[in-house]
Image (cartoon, rainbow, N blue to C red; front, side, top):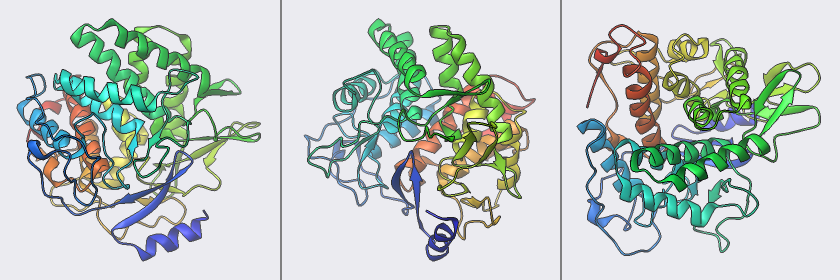
Length: 404
């Protein structure tokens, strides 16, 4: 897809944008706020997307762990986006499921001490996404297809999240087999999805489709630094330390355009090691790259220029509408405001950078238009607590955001 065709598409749409993710086409549909369903009716309907038919069941209450506001947010997320059998439904993309979404929800369940939901999520993931050749997971499950998994390629961000959630679940609830599974996932990520160029190590978005004769294509948002650190701590391997060091270098040296922002996709030349915008991919700071500042803030990398560049672009202030994306070639901005998920990441980034006005609140989960917006909201809440507030890395960080 050329930049001109991407720009033409952007110019025509104000509420829908199609982007390529992980080497596949994915539609990111920005829906209006959907009505919430009572927990007893989970499995009936999620906005315009129907869940698979299953016996409706009331979800169990969440035990105390996260703050009351964060527990309430999880209940909303669980009701809207998790089917009773443990499948997380991408309501903005035809009701498919991703390894990424399964990992997200498993992580949220550990945070809120919701073991029954965690077990349903993991059991569904293991049963439906496991690959026969290793411990990784197929990236996509489509309820509309006779063969629900048509592509066994994995997504590195999804596997990192699943492994991290399994480690946390094993520690919280004392299940050693979850820890062993997490370590196996980490081992297979290192074996299948890392490559060297010169003296640097890089994390591929997937084992296949991104390793070319002349270049590597990378997705910076797949560097989930807190998950990488957790796996490194659980089973020390110098490869994780190298990937983190070189990954942080990549975040600082893979920024482009007038706004100096990270890109959704970049490439590394196999001969020179030069980093540039990926050929054949949308040249944007958008739905993927928005997770770069999220992961940096979560990891406590509050001095990162990639984080600060995103904060400057968003200019998070009370009452200020932020742009949904930027074109890194033309410096054009989205003709519409960011959804609540991106606003949540921007709020987190501003708190990490120390520029968030006191009393600013995270967006309400009830306003999430779709699964991805809701996921970014929940991830930002976790990162605020675990990366910004808990680390006390910034004076007054814990007082800079209202807990709602």
